[in-house]
Length: 354
Image (cartoon, rainbow, N blue to C red; front, top):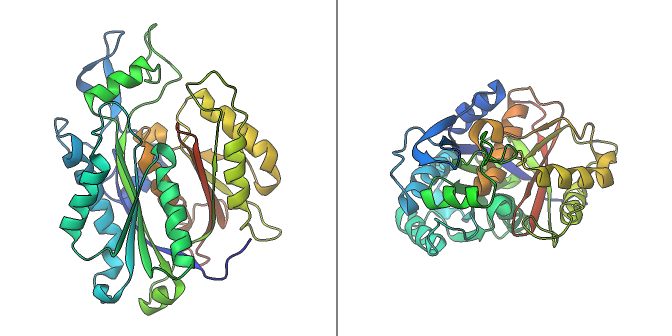
């Protein structure tokens, strides 16, 4: 269904392996630039350096909370820029943050430690802070929560962000043990993925605040939907995309009558599971899409960025509209997490393309 209160995207932020801000990262993806490199000391079972996509300005030895902060804070700061002179203290501003799910190499207390750091470092900037430790779907689940909070009038503005990093040695070893690490040797998986790291952030505001700031919307969020998949990867089941289909149908409820989605952005990363799941989901919803095979999966540029993916995909769709290389006015983003969480969102580009 269509919602009465427009929710607008007015600012973007990013830190990726191919750019230190949103616009540079999007330009690199548009140009097909790869951020892949050999890890300086991690060797795979074929005796080759592991391929990774790291933020090149960060020391590879920096880990844990410090690395997540170094990725996340610049993205948040970029997204907050329009509020610097807006009487921020009087605004009800939230932060909705996607984080990785528990896994080897990730400190158990990372969500709590990062929340403490954010409250300490950003002071009273964020009156509300919510964290979603849900892996690949986390950023879009954060978007869903902020969208509804803004719709209900509980917030004036919300930064939706996501951050992740697969670069910890223990995490890389775990990925290889799970046969998910991409490699070319006979003992490696050609259908695995390149581990990456990144942060993405988008600033969502209610229409009244956009007018008060005299800011043109880059894009608008029309609807968001989520679902859950019981037949998950790494289980003895066959996934036919039921959870992703539920998320698609919920998000596509906001599709204006007579229109179709022109652009799709997603977290497909080379693993057959994700491609098969998407195939089943779009077979059930194909009438909503102009071309289901014409999608953008930027993991071939900045690697698999997991929890950071949702906001980054919204960023790519928004910049494509702003720079007039989108295929049309409507974009769709979706994500699929190993824990079963599925989420999708429908966006409308600014008609002026400014």
